[in-house]
Amino acid sequence: MQIDVLTLFPGPLQAYLAESIVHRAQVKGAVCVNVIDIRAHAHDKHRTVDDTPYGGGPGMVLKPEPIFEALDAGQLWSGHKVYLSPQGRVLTQAVAHELAAHTHLVLLCGHYEGVDQRVLDVMDAELSIGDYVLSNGAVAATVVIDTLARLLPGVLGNAASAANDSHGESLLEYPQYTRPADYRGAAVPAVLLGGNHAAIAQWRQARPSWAPTSPSCRVAVSSFSTRRFITC
Ligand code: JCQ
Image 1 (cartoon, rainbow, N blue to C red):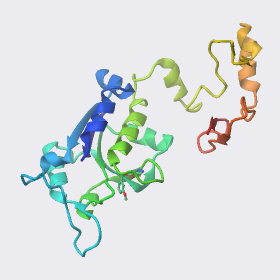
Image 2 (image 1 turned 90 degrees about the vertical axis):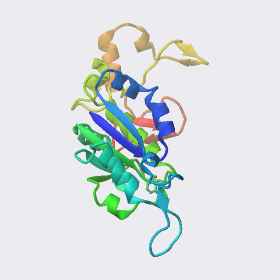
Image 3 (image 1 turned 120 degrees about the horizontal axis):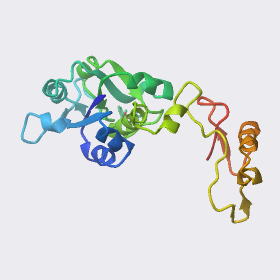
Image 4 (image 1 turned 30 degrees about the horizontal axis):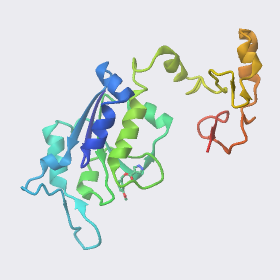
């Protein structure tokens, strides 16, 4: 999969790409991420990429020319072009599977300033990573790329890819423990220490997921799986 990202802030995105699972995915050849600085396609010596809105009003608007010319220069027109903004369709694991089926994605990072409508008119989709506003759309691109990379064949190990199959996204729907067997007075359930694999399997299956393991605040993640909980 090829992913091209058009952004005004390439630095933090590139830093993340060099560290993560996404880096491993790139080394393995599962994905090739190319970060394009929109400013590199500005026309003037001040590298201007925005201008005041026609009709007046506050703020600045990203000009069409640098973005169109970045699409020209990278031969990106044939890619699936996605604009990242809070107005878009919200990213879920199901949407991620849909996007991961594309061979070429182009992510245009939106900014609070807004983008000339003629750019948005040539996009194929508008995607949001959640109902809140970021100052920097490259943060959203980072989330999208990380979410997609781990879905690509060969990126994760077998156990994790098995967890991605139709049985649900996670194998880890039961509480997990590692050493020490007693930590600050909280003991690991005895059945897990016994080595009786049938009993362990039964405990993992039968244990009601709504039973809290500690009195901390718990919130159901109902959209993902009714059997999973996170602490807040
Ligand atoms: C992406 N969820 C949030 C893009 C407009 C009005 O402010 C805007 C901000 C952005 C940056 O992206 C996000 C975002 N998914 O804030 C367009």
